[in-house]
Image (cartoon, rainbow, N blue to C red):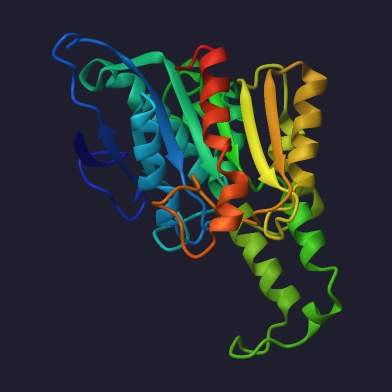
Length: 301
């Protein structure tokens, strides 16, 4: 295996362009030295403030073992730069373009490039899946729309609608109690600050709808595999149902699995991501094989 780390937007990461990526490349087989592999670009979650490590390398290794060249994208977060929409999404668009530009060197089939996102990373992937054809978005990436289109998308317990997040968190009246060590701000104030950070301005109903991938689903969305759990309190499963309904209305090939338990943040649910939660991991463990089978049927394997 070859592991390479690179800045995404140039020779070095900068304050304005901090995104980086790590490539996990299988060694060429002696009998087939020029054989091409599909590619999986992985976007971990972390609430746009960081990226969870257990949703990065363990996922890359799982896809590498499944026959993919794997790429972990460290898109911009609030800990590295300006996270406001659409900056993380533009990073993913650039990563899709980069993989195709280096297809020969990395032995990748440029017609088989999928995006894999978890939690907030799922929002990034779903946003690119629904906006790749927008020429203004493509201009921000710096490439043609067809070069930044994922050939398929895999979404694990994704964040898809910030309005659902807002509504769920504001159900509890205690959100208006003062929160210690925050300068007197209430939980509602902190939630509004967070939403404003993500959307890049006042978190109005109109702005939250504008950045919601579900409101932009068209027949041009690539084949989509989604999974989540019915007891997820962080990214409620209702978002997945709404996105799937939109895909169904537009005739987009998709597959959805909702497991009855597991909560949030289980990644690939194997020994590399286990932390005293074997029962919850066991419940969702089938998702990876199901996703690989879906990708194979859609010709992205």
